[in-house]
Picture (cartoon, rainbow, N blue to C red):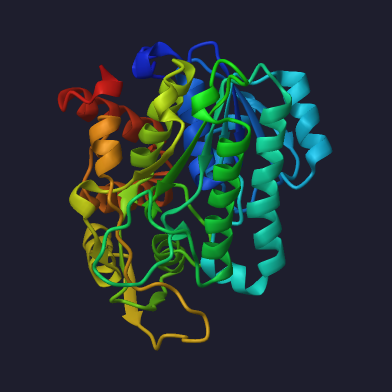
Length: 373
């Protein structure tokens, strides 16, 4: 990987020399976020129970040589508190989670304890230490009670969840809101406390470096490299697909506002495609196959014993207007970039993470995105 300097003045330059704790740093989104933060000058403290996949984007990037890598479970309050005490983070990004729907049916208790108790533990550590400026609590668009109609869900819609994963994310949001109301109330900021708590809810995130099971594009890639055919379930399921860099730019923009002590940021935020853009699974599969002809697929009979929402859209008006945040790449570009990442990795032994991040930043500058100026 070429060593090209990434602009440290992004996001107002506020992350340079800041200590940032990222839980779940070895995961797909966590590794991209940790890499971006390290490149803009942050002292990143990573806290994660393990590296869950092989290959691993975290290992490919060599992040263990760039950041402080700590193994621990977010359900272990004592260990987590020791990390806070030792490293004194300025800001926390909480991404650690059991993050998949289908495994949540196999391991519901683990899903609930990790996603709910783990979130409460992180928030409790923030409450216990006055050096923390704030926290970005990362959950999911699946936190909403989904009626599977044509509505786009806004931040003030009701939390819910049919499957254990979705229910755990809705519950984690309720925990965060309780801490925001009870301990980090924006109305008493600067008097009773000095913490800003924001929640970020993203749509279906794709990008290179994800090898998780039971995820559409990783499943297609894993079968493609074995010259096999991918069985596709639920081709009509519709999602707000977006490249991983889209929500990350939103998380970092929210973090910027926290570090700048903008009280109005202490709220929940949807970060999804522009104009509620969605694509059915069948279109994602077709676009992926067109981008790399090794990808072959067939549609299978749906397993109705494990319910998954077939339609979900996000209303991101609030982030668009109040944060001046919007995506750089549309869904089709996100799919093309993602497939190109895997093709380069497997056929050329080249990791495109740095190049794609630089491309993303360059396009954001051309589009005059506020965070990129």
